[in-house]
Length: 109
Length: 116
Image (tube, rainbow over all chains, first blue to last red; front, side, top):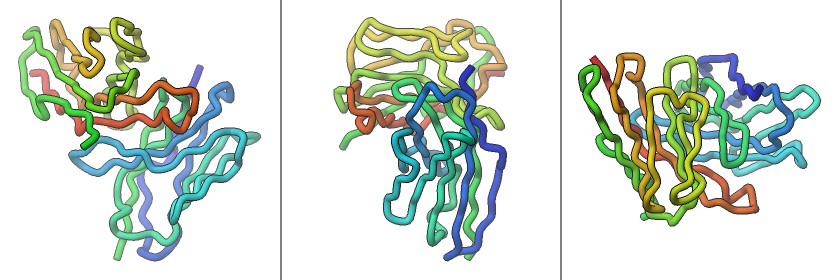
C-alpha cells in the first residue's frame, strides 16, 4: 500500500525565518518525490522534486531533503516570504502521483 | 501559453442529473489524469489516461467515467451524481518520458462541484 502523510495541517512562520514542511511515506518502491504549492482558486503548481539517488535538492530559496532510512522528506524555505503563504502538498510517484493531505503555510509579516 | 483548461469552474447540480466536466491541454501531453481534493484527504486520483483510447482506474473511480478520444481532451463524466461527489476536481497532464523531470504534472485551475 502506498501512503503519503503530512501530519501538520498548518504551520505559521515569521517572515524572514525558515519554514520546514514535513512528509512521511510508507512504500519505498516509488523513488521520486515532488512538492506542489497551491494558492486559493488555483490548481497546484510544481515547486521542486527529488529522486532517491539524491538526499538533497536545492532551487533558490527551496531545498528538499530526503531521508530514505526514515522514509521522510522535508521542504525548507529560507527566507520565508509573505508570497509563500499557500497549501503545500508532497507527492510520490512518477506518472501516477499519490499526494499527502497538505500543509497550510502562513507567513506572518 | 501552455495550460490545462477545465470547464466549468463552478457547478451546482442535483442528484442524478448527468454532467460532464471538460479538460483540455495544449502541451501535446500523453498522460492525463483527474483528481478530487477533499478536506483532510489531499488529492486522490480518480482516473488516468496514458494516451488516446487508453484509460485506467485510479484510487477512487466509483461513480465516474472518462474517455480519451483525442490527445488534448479528457472529459470527466458523472452519470448519476450523488452528494458524496461534492468536491473540488482537478485535471492534470504530463509528458510521458523516460526522464522523470519531464513527468511533472501540470494542473488545471479546478472545478468546484456541489451535488444537492
